[in-house]
Length: 456
Picture 1 (cartoon, one colour):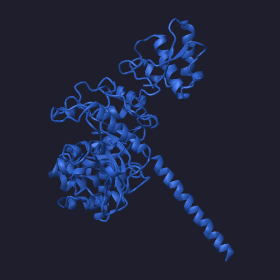
Picture 2 (cartoon, helix red, strand yellow; picture 1 turned 180 degrees about the vertical axis):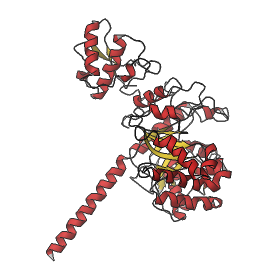
Picture 3 (cartoon, one colour; picture 1 turned 45 degrees about the vertical axis):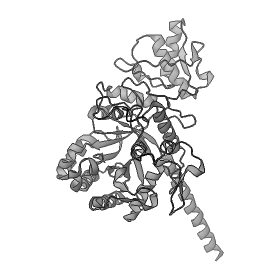
Picture 4 (cartoon, helix red, strand yellow; picture 1 turned 90 degrees about the vertical axis):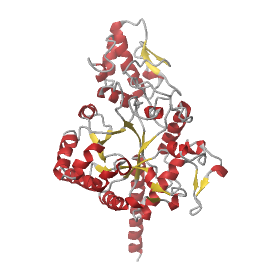
């Protein structure tokens, strides 16, 4: 009896250990990513885009297509990529298994694993943006997945489709939320597919629009994820859960809406969320400060792993909309001003991210750089540059001809790039910026053009 009790105790301990490990692993997977739209009059070259991603330590991106040049530029970077089937290709793919197989062959198999493709987004907000394709959307998902299965890639690459949160009706209180019932003939088989393939619900969450359309019912601070006094929080009268922001309320509404259809184990990934930094005269809250506040708060909220009131501690990975301002997008001024950067890689605003980790570290707090000293002997600089790019293990490929940091082609400029990279690799210690006396720490950003330095 004692032996059996001991075995059961050991088994219980092992089970608890596995649970701890699985939760820890899930936590480690929480991330902030960025969407990359291309509606720019002067779209940066893919190598420049990747240089910016690296400089900002962005490790997750979502593309709205499967552009070959972009996928080639992302190869061997380790950056995790969601690629997309554009809406105008869904009808063809949803009606033909062979078309889907050809798409996967050209856009996935040709690039994977060098390019770390982790998921395929089949369309974007198809149910609301392209309702005539709704009937074949699930077929498109299944055909793309079947092509991945045929290439033995289905365990590495998931398939889903982003939904607009507008299809969730009666979204507050979240516990009463349900999907637009007219969409159930599509949503039920879709959720069944996501569940059976171990995929996730892609959801676009825009508190800016919820706020704008609420006619004053939603407070600005509640939309911006600003801290609220307890008496200002919204309370779900059924669960008595307190909501301090729109983002959490919408995500939980999605979980409850899925549960209403008897799907309780499909995780949510927010594929788009953000705030515009500029708007028309009738969009007074599309401002630099509000955009900065929302995105800074959102990044902290996700990476702090606070989760939502319904699922505390289970953070929802989120892609910020978006990397660049898209100046050729039609519509109101706000449509062109969701970006974190302009086409030159200059921040639209400096995110307030102290204590949030390294991602999107275009944060002025404690910004320091390591640069080559003026007037230093060029032979000493060259020796230090050679050391940094060799034994110092700095990636000096951006200094090669044709790459973003090649110009100006002189030893002091190249040395500054290498010194600053090494300085940041070593945790910005003062000893890491010496190089036998030819380097010095500065607060002046040496970035120029598309050559973005790590400290930025």
